[in-house]
Length: 409
Length: 175
Image 1 (tube, each protein chain N blue to C red):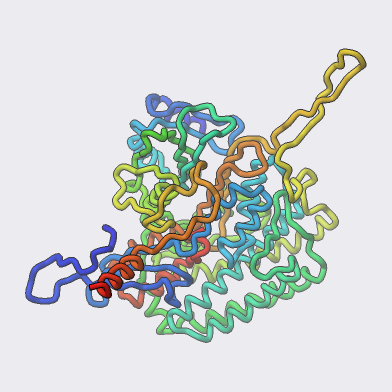
Image 2 (tube, chains in turn green, blue; image 1 turned 30 degrees about the horizontal axis):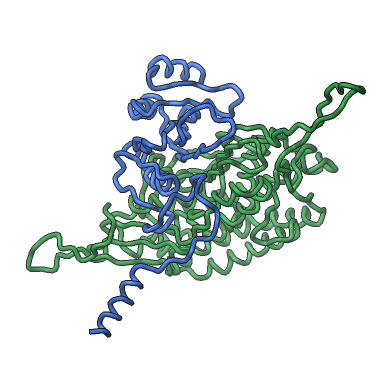
């Protein structure tokens, strides 16, 4: 598609009105979930083509990360996908641990798995709330936010923050769970399956919901893989690709869960996949909580984890023979981390979040590349919307589950 | 996996320069730019590498452990969902001849990755349908993720359309 600058170019000479009609949507539009701008090429109410424009929230996280040390970079990751920030923390920490050659204690792995799944529930609840609100179901919004609030309160007890957690650090996690938190989580996992039933009662067979979601934005399996869709968007098309199963990290090898998949690859299937994922996440939390007493009292951070302020150089003493008396010691500068590269990816609630780090031996990453699911999903919007109505575009943006902080970095 | 690497090395001996597996988290292939497209096409169509996880550029200006001449590297992370194979492919690109073949015809997801790579490093992609900036504004000067791009606050510039409006207004008032 050519850059949309000349908006009144006349393509066909005829007596009727044949000029292409362009409509600008966003960046300040409530249904774009942030500052996403889409230039639509319309024919009547049908979308012929569209051009998503991102970058309004670009903060240069990759460049900033190259100028801060490894532990400080984790703080930046909170600001990417601010709805599920522990998932971002985990992706960063996993990549940095590969660089540092660290082994995470088992208790820390279990705690990470719990918070990651809590983040997944938070994210899917917020997704369901806003997606339903976009389509016109107001009540779901209130129900979902009530339950999300519960989890955010638990997060506040865990690490003191509700949105930007920075809970996961290189080599483990920052704090251990108290017994109060474990009790609260048990209570939550008991109650939550009933709440999921509540949401499903509200919209699962709702006629308006079905009309707005069935057969909208159908993607075949090959097309979805080619477009780079991941997470529930890919699984809705029937591809059981899940990083938690394909390349397990943390404690996902120990827990049992199924990867729900859809059949038709439309918006409704993606909704069903996410609802099933809520149940699976709940069961994963429960399994990890049951395993926690085995590791009671174990450390939550690896012994050789780097300090929060990583020194620029490490100095070690080298003994050299002194010409007159015995020995003298000379300081030798060493690299803080081994040089090399590492790639780590996790199944974040939105899709595959991958981090690629290149280290040059100093305390700062030489290159910090973040592959975010939202960026890829927004790039797929033109292929999904062709031939749909403007009203469906709102449903499509909702079903892709994009967060602009995640996409623009 | 090792069989696959050996087979690739035999078949594409002119394209693949080195294969690194020791001390790496992934098998890493370093390829030449010439013949790269055929290689990727073979991987996609014959070997089932259907999913391009990531495409990014890396600037190795004044890198301490550098053992090659070129300045940039374009790094591809390819995954095969049916076979669970994972490959990292690197192509080295010099600053004076700063372009690479586009893989957008093969992987649609590469479209925005390549736009971002061009945006941040100035590496042009030959065969890309619509190569323009994606994250930075269209009138931005310089490539932010290059190592010689300084980290400071940009001086504020006049917004072009606003400047035009002011000039137009002043002209009208003058005449």
